[in-house]
Image 1 (tube, rainbow, N blue to C red):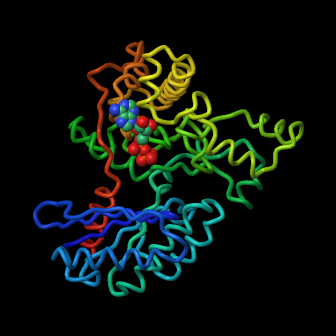
Image 2 (tube, rainbow, N blue to C red; image 1 turned 120 degrees about the horizontal axis):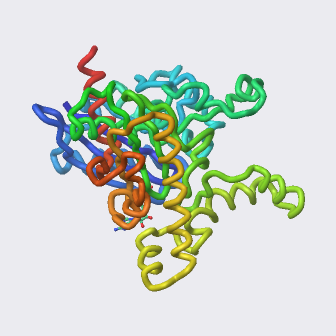
Length: 356
Ligand code: ADP
């Protein structure tokens, strides 16, 4: 069995190709960057030619499935879904909730429906894992009609990663999934934390968009909405300027000038005060979320760190977990797991194909 996993962005394509006999193996991977409008199909054709020339595939029509990462599934697309015209329409309809991501994800889907029309395509949604959140977690304190008419609610993201981390952590804990209470941290340039109770996401830090929650590389995370009103009313900011400020000029970069955690830690050790503050604000925010999630789920079996920062920075992990023993957190139940969203999608795709 061969499963091609695609992450189609607005200007790039990342892929991994897995084969499954007794075990599942990564047999090829790559990235194509600097793609212009309408160049996704051409890039995929080039990838196909390269894989054929290396005798890795006969052609793309010989694949068993193509798995696509789709950022936003809205309220309706709540689990991995075989793509047909109706699903394409639903992903399109959800684009207003993720205007940068969903159209880019669709580019890959549409390109493949021409290149390999006979191969099943499956969409995996970053929002799906969080569909188990109760209303009390996913509703904002806004009037009902804003939820009902505009779909304004918390969706949560990085779901494929949090789900992978859950599945890997149960191997370490040696417990059935439905008995696991864990907190998963995906700390990369984007960052989110999820409270998992009895094997299900019950709360997560990202919300209506991936802007809510933790301090991130260049995203602000939680902020008093009054600041936005002030900037608009008193300082003449346009919505475009506010968008840019919150998504690209804030977070770690906003505080200390760089979003690279490795540099921040190096600079902090050399005595740079802004770098130290960025590190402290980043870790303090995570600590506060962990505390609130423990209050929510009760006893935690494990805290899982992942993403570029979570996997590599002992400094961040130590600072986050410092003085948390009274909450049941110690080195015995703190783990680092390297996330692998593509493997998670490939495994799920194989399960789906086998269930037909
Ligand atoms: P993305 O969300 O873009 O996939 P990654 O998961 O690759 O990002 O994480 C990128 C972050 O990981 C950067 O802030 C980078 O500095 C940080 N990082 C990578 N290696 C280290 C390290 N050894 N120590 C501290 N931070 C690191």
